[in-house]
Image (cartoon, rainbow, N blue to C red; front, top):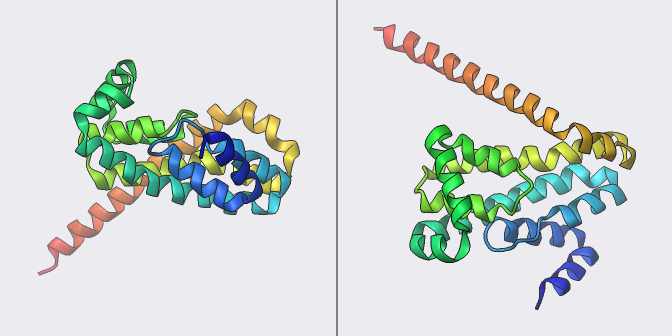
Length: 196
């Protein structure tokens, strides 16, 4: 079965297509799930959020396969799968930002396999990798799904135009929320440690 046949099946069976393309994008495929996700969401705006969440779950599961490939076959992955320029760039980002590099990579419109396999090669903490993947992929798919659900296909040019700004605002809100939760948890721990 070649990719052309895979795309035909994806178009005929929307949910299966979203799942398969999202899963494969995270571990072996250069085809982005957007090619079925966006048209399917436009065709049925009421299912846009559902399809975005389905894509997030499938991409997260596929990312575990990508991570495993990078973790178990590090040398092969660096020589045959990930172009050297991408590997070096990702390594620098991970050195500088840690798991947040995965978060930003999860939002980028690039084959996610590059990020997932690189995370395995670099032996990133699996829990942090998973968290960054879920948050980043959810943001990536929902930033299109939610507006299409709320406003229909007419919103698509606006989403395309402002997606970078929306991503920044969403990231700031998520980081702010994480900081708030961290300090809230820390205060509770400190209060509990004071109780005799």
